[in-house]
Image (tube, rainbow, N blue to C red; front, side):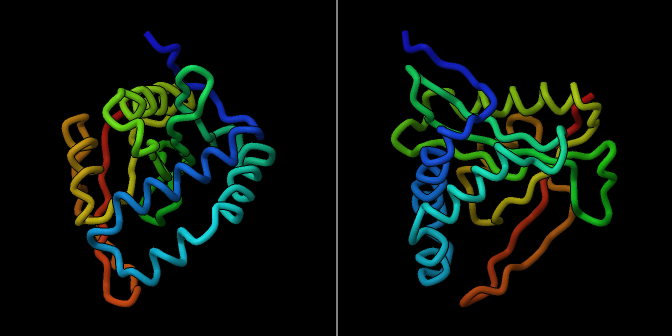
Amino acid sequence: MADVGVRDAILSDTAAVAEIQILAWKAAYRPFMPAEPLAEMTASAEPWRERWAEAVTAPPSPRHRLLVAVADGLVTGFAAFAPASDPDLDPGTDAELVTLAVDPARAREGHGSRLLAAVADLLREHSFSTAFTWVFTEDAALRSFLEPAGWAPDGARRTLALERPVEMIRLHTSLV
């Protein structure tokens, strides 16, 4: 059996995190995201690597974390969380799952589930009682992963103005 787990990201993980982000976005968003914005978002891993490097080396607070899933020493996925930033939420008790992505080549190996469980455990340790995340309405794969794990729409919606409007919904789950 492979040596698998979840740990805090380190600086040397950030190139893999950025590459997985681009691969996952291309795989997940291609069916519904307008082509030009998706191409711009996924043109280069370098800007994302720099952002993830900053998240590792200078997080805004101890309650901002970047985790990686690993298998046999290789990064296979990642998740980031922070205190909630939406104005209708309380950053003292509400957290945001900022992102969760797994290398499409490593999908269905349990990495996403391990990441989600680790995020929930750490959010509880940081005294958060509810977690929220924004998902594209048309991202059936992510919704079908999160909803059976206890995440449900809370009624909040937003629209990204791209080449055409792209709808998002906010999901939430209790951590208590």
